[in-house]
Length: 280
Image (cartoon, rainbow, N blue to C red; front, side):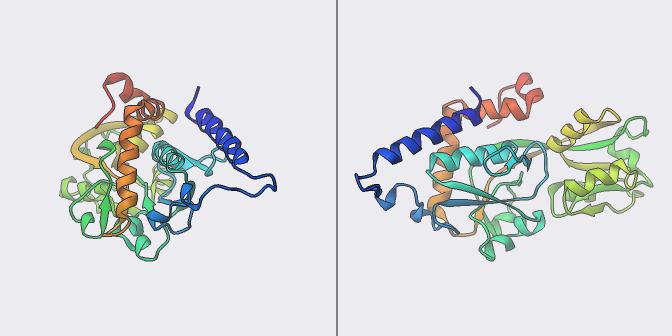
């Protein structure tokens, strides 16, 4: 039985329980403390509002068949956590730079950020993070037969990066001295078409989206990966929503303990799951 099927069964069971809690006059006799999430200081009571920069496959992408309209590793983890906390989940598509800088939280738009965000000390100045949930690499994606086999082959060429990311930082610190300045894009949604159109020579960004592009398009390949010891975490407004962050950490551990995390990891990262255990 798939994760989504399990969720549907759980939702049906919850509906049955709700009906049995109603009196003869049809009014609910359940208490207000059963699922409003008031202890979490939510943007909207009863709803976990998740902000994410979409698309960034396989971590977040549009899926009209999913409950939230989105799917991916991050989104599925969030959906499971929301369900287990008795909350609805709403997803907002926002810019990554505004998310990682904390301005989205300052404007009160979301409760949590789930957007393949690397935990960095400078980001901790404006954000709090959950426990790490994914270990990542940086990678270089280029057209097959382009002559680009490593970052050293980008002399005189332009690489595309996503603005505000660790990929942008890595490019700035490691490109050859005679390479063009990295061209910054708001998201992978603009990066990938630019590479396909030949407007940039390569993409330097986290491994997961580059892997998806290479798997789906045989004219492109990952030519180099870079060990950067990066770990993703879910983001929260600095100094706020402490109870929500603690609850998310507890649910993350529960998803590991009951096997749901491994199931989702194998679904979205099959090549990594078959080669080694899921990351810590």
